[in-house]
Image (cartoon, rainbow, N blue to C red; front, side):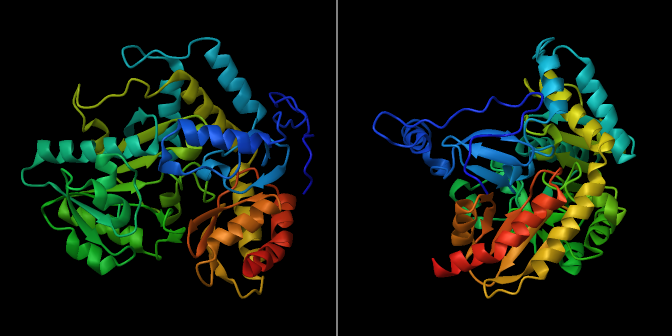
Amino acid sequence: MSETSAMPSSPGAATPRTPRSSADGEKRGSALQKRFAAALMPNYGVPPVAIARGQGSRVWDLDGKEYLDLIAGIAVSALGHAHPALVSAVSAQVAKVAHTSNLFLHEPEVALAEKLLSLLGEDGRVFFSNSGTEANEAAIKLVLRKQAAATSGRNVIVAADHSFHGRSLGSLAITGKESIRAPFAPFGLTVRWVPYGDADALAAAVTPDVAGVFLEPTLGESGVIPAPAGYLRAARDAATAAGAALVLDEIQSGIGRTGAWFACQAEGIVPDVITLAKGLGGGLPIGACIGIGEYGTGFAAGDHGSTFGGNPVSCAAALAVIDTIVAEGILGNVIKVGAQLIDGIAAIDHPLLAGVRGSGLWLAAVLSGDHSAPVAVAARERGFLVNPVQPDAIRIAPPLILSAAEAEEFLTAFPAILDAARGA
C-alpha cells in the first residue's frame, strides 16, 4: 500500500494535506504521542498510530501513511469513514439543534426508537444512552427494578466467564474477566458465574433467586468466540422456566456486524432486553437498551436518566447508518465479504495460523500461540490495522462497507505479515 497523503475526494471528505514534520525533524505522529503521554491518563498506554483522516475503509496517519482499517474503531465505524450520508445527516442536525436534554423531546430520538423496534420486530420500548457500558448499566437496573416490583428475593445475576460488558462498576461486576474486575471489588451485585457455552451449567445456575441472565451472542473481547449451536435457545428456555430475564449484549454484534440486524435473529431468539452501541452511531457516541414486552415498561418515572442520552446529533447519525445499510444492501455485503475472509484465512497454511472463527465481518484469525502482538505490528508496518484482542487471536472487524477487492488485498498480504511476525 502506498504511503501518500493523496486520497479520493468525496462529499464531506477531509482536504488532503502534505505531511509536515516539526522543526527538529520529528514526525508529527511521534510528537503527538509525546503530548498524549504528558496530558492524558495512562490507562490506554500510548496508541501506536495517530490518525488524521479517513475515507471509506482507509485511514491516513499524521505523517501521511495509508492503512486499510480492519478495526473500524472496535466495530464502530459501520459505514467506514467520511461516508456522505453520515456527514450530511450530522451536519444538517447540528445546524438545527445539537442538544435538548431529556427535559424536551425531538424527532430524531423518537424516529430512531421506532426504527429499532421495527428492525427487531417486537413490541417494546427504548432507552438511549451514550455508550454500551451505559446501556448495560440501564439493563441491570431495569432487570432488578422489574423483578423487585413483581417478586421478592430475586437479586442474583447470572453471567459468563470471560465475558465483557463494560468498565463502570455495575457493568464491570458482570464482566467475567477477573484480572480487570478484582481491583475494584467488592460490588453491589450478587453474580453467579457460568462457563460460556455450557448449556447444562447455565440451566443449573438459573434458579428462582435469579433476576436476569446476561450473555453475549459471541464473546467479543475474549477473541470472537461464538456461542455453540443451541446455546442461546437453552439460555432462553432456562430464563423462561425460572421467571428470569434474558439480556443479550449485542453491543458489538448488533446493527449488521454478523450479517443480520441482531445476531440473536439468526438463532430465532427473542430476549427480554437487548443492548446496543458501537456500530449504531457509525462513529458518534450512542447506546440503546431495548426492553421487550413487559420489560419495555419496567422503569417507572425517575428510575433512570441521562443528560446526553438520545442526543439529536447522535440519533440523526444512527438513523443515517440504518437507512444507508438498507439503501446500499450492506447486510448482503457483510455476508459475502465475511465469507470471503473466512475462506481466505482458512486456506492459508502457516505455522503461526491455527484457523478462523466468527461470522460476517466479526472475525478472529486464531493463532498457534501468543503471536498476536508481533502480527499486529507486522500488519501495521505493511499498511493494515488489526486488533490483537487476545494473545492468540487477531480481531478483524472492518467497516461493513469493506469491498471484496479490499478483503483480497489483506488476504494476499497476510502470509507475508505472518512471516514477518514469525521472524520478529
